[in-house]
Image (cartoon, rainbow, N blue to C red):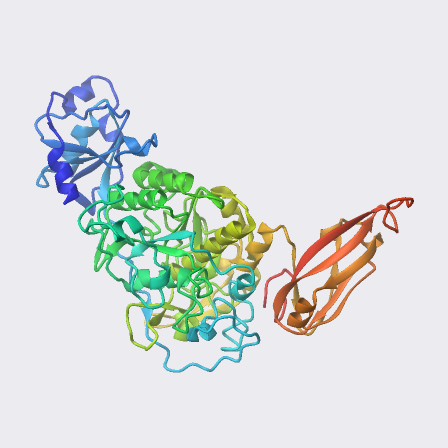
Length: 627
């Protein structure tokens, strides 16, 4: 209704500017201002950027209505975007030429429709082995035992489920499991807002919740947007979608509620999980047009979200370069950039981070928008560190996360919330870079939660850097080949893993390492039950062998939780043996500048203390990853 009223209130304009006159004047050719393709574009609509706010778009012979795409905004780029509406029976290309011929018009874009995400749902596994966990799980959610993608100790399958092929979440949860001040927007199908494992962590617009139905109570331009907004139907009514609900659960399903699954930043069961904002861009078989998705990004920034998850993208051959994406999809790029520069959370974030899926077409490049060099783009790995058979890889991919692999069996896909109650817990299994992406968004949400706890403030660029550097080497695992079933060929295919080396990003993300980086606390990784000898050069400089060490210790709790049997320093080498998986901090104190500590009537050195986080898992790879 609001769109219709805005349309009727805009004055109809008609004047003397014609295409032929513009061409003969020696000015810019109209077609040089027209970008992207009219294929699958909305009829009767053009997206137009003008050179100033007081510009008037004038064409002859065609009645048009012009309205701001982003009203009441100061942003220099977004404020100059207009929607030009006209009779749908008219040729898009002809009207585009007329509009582009106006001097005040900088660019014209067709309003392209985004394709619906194909289903990534899988049937429930027929049977599952009872996992024999090597650690005590911190929460009572019954499905957590099978969420290998959070903490993989190999107990589900020795061959297909490798120790450490996960996001190391249990160790991260020792520091934070979320914060309800952090809002994560899910740009996807609608979230099932009354799902029993999501409802307590759904974002609520209190002004609209307690306001009058049919009224824009908070004056943000959207009516009844209680939990987000349905940009497909232009309505505050968010409709439940299995894909969006699954993605939301990975980020923030309620933890420790004795129900279904856990979410990465879902809290501890006392209302402390991150809040999930539903930005619905898919409904049934319908998807949004580009101007609607652009509005979703602005909505997210204006209403408090600092992370936005995008488990969608164009076909990987839609754009061939960053420059082409910038040129052909300017309205969407301007909106994403607005989110990243404008989103804000007092005491934690100055800017926002948009996280995108790389795509599931097995292409040797990522799909846009994620492939753009300023955005985070997520590829998918399986439960054994290998590249998921479907994942796009190569240019544009910059971080990997668990996405599952159905050809190892449904059990080795990602378990998260679902609108389908095929089982008593309301969860299902899916696979895809769509599933890998919320793992990264969830880790980012944990980082923002930890920033609030520790009193840090992150910029958008700082959080991106944390995400991309909190990773372990994935390339070492891309050796040999693996089998998967090719439905097109109707047979099993032996997939070589060599082409994925160096093509999946900086590595696979580690949530715990991200938090340690925020504290500037170095991590060491040791194998349970084995004696580790580690140089202290990284922590005390290249002369660490010749220093005098006064203290090498851990608290009684850490000694007990890690089963520490040996902890000492000899000849500059840290010697440690732990018998239990987990993580905890040790303290090493060394004297630099002498054999004794100076002070009072003693000439000596400075006592330097370093805290080091010890992470104990199964078999350790020399590069710091886990085999």
